[in-house]
Image (cartoon, rainbow, N blue to C red; front, side):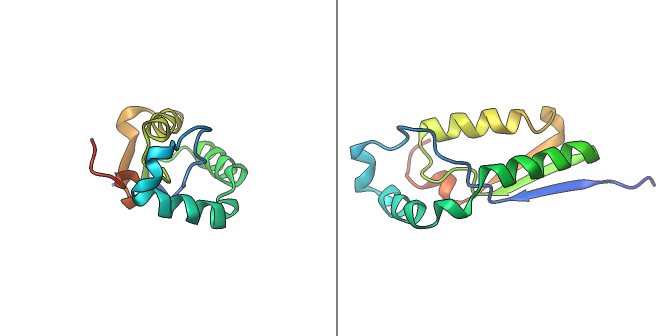
Length: 109
């Protein structure tokens, strides 16, 4: 059986697009996430994530698994940005996603 190369990215916490949070969002669990993002957002360096993705692409894995939090507040803007980011990782059949708790902060679809 030939080797199978799996690349795994966990908890990328993509930077939220500007205007992701509205005033109404601050009366839900999103408020706590906003506080945490202000405190720790600098730890999630997009340049490091971009370098990691480039390295994965150069190694041409058979499959890519993304687990954990892609978003920070689970807003529609963040989900759309995460979907676009995932589309750049590889073909649909070669990328698997298992969302994290930050991807489902509120009880909406």
